[in-house]
Image 1 (cartoon, helix red, strand yellow):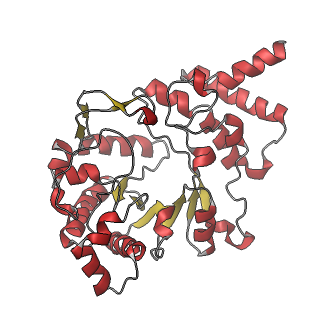
Image 2: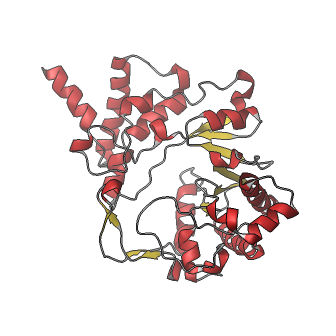
Length: 337
């Protein structure tokens, strides 16, 4: 509410990408929307009654183009900017040397903390190009003032400053594994998405970790045959890949306690309906639940895997979920032959 242009401007784009990313095709339809604070509170309450804590993510310093379209003065160049029509990584990010940026983000986080009681606030930290910072006089002055060696340390400085603000309000931060670059903020937890190496590194530094590697836990990736599925962002993560995942593989025994668990991600750029989301999420989410609940005690042989998944599929059918049936149909066909 303090920054109304975030919903008036930043929440809307004038076109959307259609088809595969490589095709670079776009429609001309205005698209967007936002949750009101009342709606967000309802989601938090609904989840809490079911034993779920909703952790909000406010991306910084990258993935901020929509906010910069609304408030271009928070960038290094001053803008102007347009809300992106497609997904990707963009050079224009929050100016790390502009005090107004921190005031803005603190104001946003104040409202977020008022809505979300989660002890963790996700601050993103991923995929932040340093191109603008390298030529920005304010950023370079901030680096000199704080004796920072490079722009990676500038990002660490940025994240640490925001961590101090949240810690002062009895909250802790969690961010993607890029927040390791330039030095990890003192109390930060890490979500390791570029493989598990960052997670192992953070755990070895005695920081809490959630393993969420793109391979195999990005559920927006194809799961069977790309030629037979609706268009997806790419990649390939089969049901069997998910079931075979071990979130603590390679973690030294003395640091296992820092692995909080694992998380699957489903980014919905190509998913316009809840049915499509359900199709991408299940039954892979059920396979991940087997991994996390049973760990190395879960059955490893194919027959036991099929039996476990068959149980979940029957449950999904009863609940009316629009799960992806491919592998089960294939198994049934093979057995019939």
